[in-house]
Length: 172
Image (cartoon, rainbow, N blue to C red; front, side, top):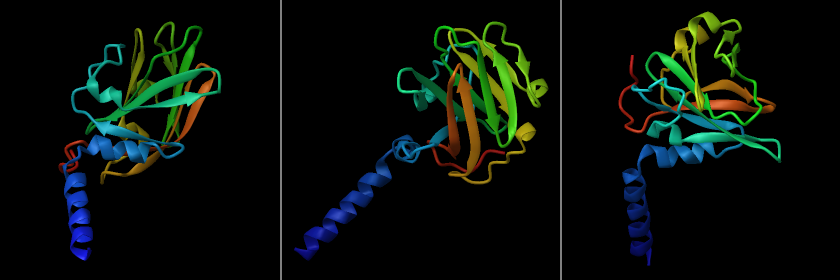
């Protein structure tokens, strides 16, 4: 009996070691007020929210409306994207205490880091913010930072956890 229990736990450990990081990261992201940001070095700012890396996303809701949004990061930038609901006029982002807003009809940026950020508005809104302008330096996977995202009248506020599917060294 003892041998079977040991064999079971060894098999479980081997199985968990074979799972891709995004499966394990979803568990982290399922905690209330926490979402994961996947490392992606090839985000295309096209206002479409279609790269496969965006499939890992979070939701905000007021009980009647639900809004999906996603967070990615590269060695130099933080990306936040969402598909606005009809009638939404603005998206605002506060990361590491610094904020900006995007006018969803014009793509115009305002706020303390607006001059360093880029936004593309199409079917979705995609925002690129240099990590350096946020004062964020990613030194380890699992690192968490404060994040608040509002689209229209819906808001999500919590922690973003920086992860990577390949678990390689931290890009510099």
